[in-house]
Every structure is written in C-alpha cells, then in structure tokens.
Amino acid sequence: MPMTYQGTVALITGASAGLGVEFARQWAERGADLVLVARRLDRLEGLAAELEKRYGVTAHAVAADLALPGAAAALRAELDARGISVQTLVNNAGFGSHGPFARQDPAQINEMIQLNVVAVTELTRAFLPDLAADGRGALVTVASAAAYQPTPAMAVYGATKAFVLSFTEAVGYETRHSPLRVLAVSPGPVSTEFFDVVGSRDAAVGRMATPEQVVTAARRALERSKTPPSIVAGLANRVSALAAALTPRRVTLAVSGRILKA
Image 1 (spheres, one colour):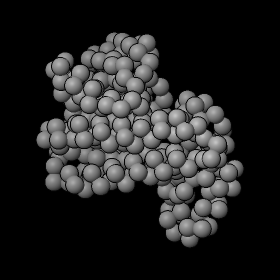
Image 2: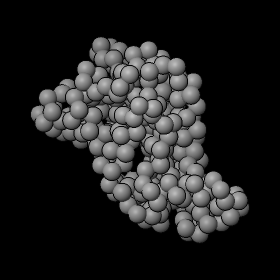
Image 3: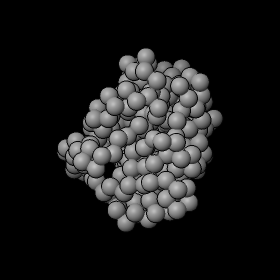
Image 4: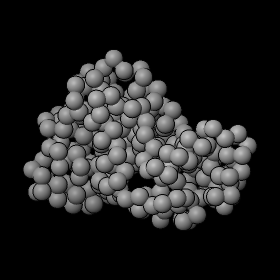
C-alpha cells in the first residue's frame, strides 16, 4: 500500500517550532489533516491557521506538556472525545542539554527522559494498534545521529535517542505484516531552537541542516516501496554513524568526547 496523505490525520508533537513545523507543512501540502501538539498554544494556532488557509486542510491545535506524567493518555482521551482518529503519528518533541552529567539539574534530567523516552513510548502504545489496523499512514520518530555512539557531555540526551532508535526499529519489525510504515529518522545538527535550549553550540557537530532537508529525507524514505527501519539524514552523518559502528568502542568514545568538548 502506498503512503497516503489525502483523507488521513497526522498527529505531530513538538509542532510549534523547527522540525515539527516542517513536518506539518509537508504533510499539509500533500493533503493531510493535522493535530498539532506542543506547549505553546499561540504558536500552534498561528500555524494551524496558516496551513488551513494555504492548503485547505483541517488543523487542530492542542496544547499539551508531554513531559508531564499521563500526558499521552490524556491526549488520546481528548482526541477520542473530539472524534478525531489518527493515521500518522510523528513523535518529534524532545530536547537536550550539554555539560557534565554530574552537574546537570536532576529535574531537567527527569524532564528530558520523560519527554524523549516515556512520552514517545506511551504515545506510540496509545495509537499504534489503530495506526497498524488502518495502515494508510506512518509512525515516525525523530531520533538523532547522537544515537549511534556514546555522547559525553550529552550523556542523557544521547542515551534517550539510542532508546528511540532501537525502540522504533523493533516496533517496525513487530508490525511488519501490517501496511503501516515505521521509520526512525536521525538528523545531525539542524537549524532550529534546539541549540538555544541546549545552551551551547558545542553540541552542534557537523554541517547544519535545514528542517526542510531532514523532513524531506524522512518523507522520501516513507514513500519508498519498502520503507527502511531507520535513516540517518545527511551524507556526512551517515558516514559518521557507519564509522562509529566499525570502530572499537573505546576509540569511538574518545573521539566523541573530544568533539563534544566533554
């Protein structure tokens, strides 16, 4: 079954900025209705109005803090109450931080794990049975090139993205007999607000990509006759990921530590 946009609804988290906005634009351009989820309702409403006017789709703005316990279940309940069924789920919301783990704020660490890992897991569980049964859309999770090696100075962030990558590939295999397309996309540095939240440009390793480049790569992968379980966006990032897999772990760790200025 080909990837379908027309007549489907795509739920996109972290839709108020960066990659989330671009996922929304590219899906709307192809005729998908949208559920836009983030904390900043004003941004969501502005984006929803823009996409509805430009592409003639329906876009629902839903304010939610997915870092709060129970947020995924609450979101599913709200959409059920509104009578909105979802065919595509884009797990995009997440954030990182830079600096020695021992100096990180414990509350920020917990929030990062809750958003990057727990929310992704709970949202996927909440919607996956319906996604697989319908089969017209996709499950997309945004991992990171950081998932392919340890990341000193970004220890928790890299570990959360390694979880996302492994989790998504495993779910994709489990649902391989359904028509659902499952993809983990791993970008390198992207010109978004991500590094403003991180608080350091030391985490921006390699050439900066645009959100359009990353989302286009993900969409094209989904549209292949056989969707791969995961992609690394950008040639240099793919080479780095392959090199990390072929290099002894101690060497990879030392190189990563120097690059990230740990």
